[in-house]
Structures are given as C-alpha cells and as structure tokens.
Image (cartoon, rainbow, N blue to C red; front, side):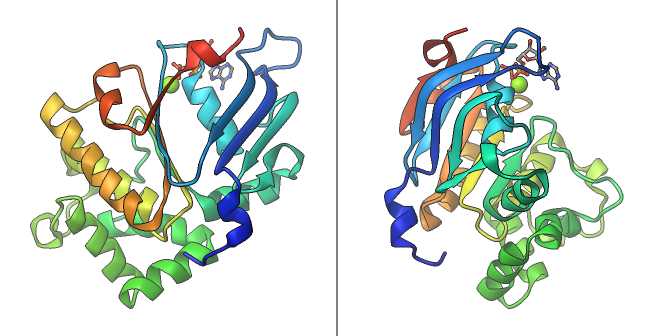
Length: 238
Ligand code: ADP
Ligand code: MG
C-alpha cells in the first residue's frame, strides 16, 4: 500500500453522533455517539441477532448513509459523498465478507476472487503488481487460505463445501489489499476448530498490510483473539 502519512494519523473508521433509521419516520436502529477504529486494528463487534450489527457494517461500507452524524472512513466522510462516489470508494477500499458469502454461481472460483478488481482499478493494479497477474494473485490467496488450485480444478463455486466457499469469499475480500476488511458473521456455518483457524488466516493476511478488520458476530467465544471487543448494545443508545 502507498504510504500516506496524513491518512496514517487518521483512524480507519470514525463515527460521530450517528443516528440511522432504515426509513424516514421509522424508529432509528442505531444511535452511536462515537466509535473509532484505529488503522490496523482487529475489532470484534458483538450483539444479539437484530441488534443492528449488519446495519452498522452497511454504514461503514457506505451502502447506506445516516440521517444524522458522520461516518468517516480512511479520512473521507461517507455521509456527504454522492452515491456513485461511495460505490467507487467501497470498491477501492473495502473487502466485504458476507454472511452467506454471495459468491457468483456462473463465475469460476478464480473469477469470483478477482471480481473486485473489475470494479476497482486501484485494487486491480495492486493485485497484478504483487504477483505478475490477477490470476496468479487469486491463486496465491486461495492457496494461503488452504485451497489449492490443483484440487478444485474447474469446479463450480456452488459445488464447494461451506468451508471452501468461505475461503473463496475471504480471498475475494482480500484481493488488491483493500484498507478495510468487513466480515459479517462469516464463520457461522463452521465448527469451532475451523472457525478459529479461518480467523487466524484472516489475521495473517491483514497483518501484512496493516489492514483494519471489522468482524461482527453473535458468537462471543471468538472475541478473545481480537485486539478489541465492542458490545454494540453498550455503544448504541437505542
Ligand atoms: P443484526 O445484524 O444484528 O442481526 P440487523 O442490522 O440486520 O441486525 O437489523 C437491525 C434492525 O434493522 C432489525 O430490526 C431489522 O429488521 C432492521 N433491518 C435490517 N435491514 C433492513 C433493511 N434492509 N430494511 C429495513 N429494515 C432493516
Ligand atoms: Mg446481521
């Protein structure tokens, strides 16, 4: 990643006086006075189902904007950015691991991994620069996460086990070194042993580039290996 002293001093995520409702006139789901995540931190956000964890991630990714308050990500204010600019910002800066992975069934495994590079020139150039070409970088990431190209061959993503799909989703989030990785309960389908191994691999990849990791789960048994644990109910004034 290009060193940028100005941005290094800024937190990766800075939320202030936020109020968010899914629809105007509806009761707000989140009211957060302050949440800061320093660059490179691995933060675990916990809260019961329905408490607003996924909503918070949508705000950090700029999928939605708050009715009140500020959402700063890598020094940019998402709440004042036009929709198209937010979409590009998200493509460039954020790797998103969805709970259900959201892999594209008609794309190959490697094409699924390289997908973010179609939408982001920055990530495409970083990924290609790292390993010669995009395919090689996708294969390297998959291997790092325990998926050998030789073993999956031309299999469709839909034929992979849940654990394998999860690794494809993680490689897709990591390709091109986005500044922030967002993971929305990505381990909920795994047993305890695979869960921890997966998170450690994610940590290793994040460590190398000082990537910020925001990991959301209702499963508090995972919290201990993170730098910090945030209870959503403790910071949400709803
Ligand atoms: P969690 O991820 O902690 O389970 P969510 O953020 O998904 O919680 O949901 C918080 C609240 O927001 C719930 O009441 C849910 O019904 C509501 N909600 C979530 N997504 C939407 C949406 N796209 N439109 C309207 N309401 C939503
Ligand atoms: Mg959720």
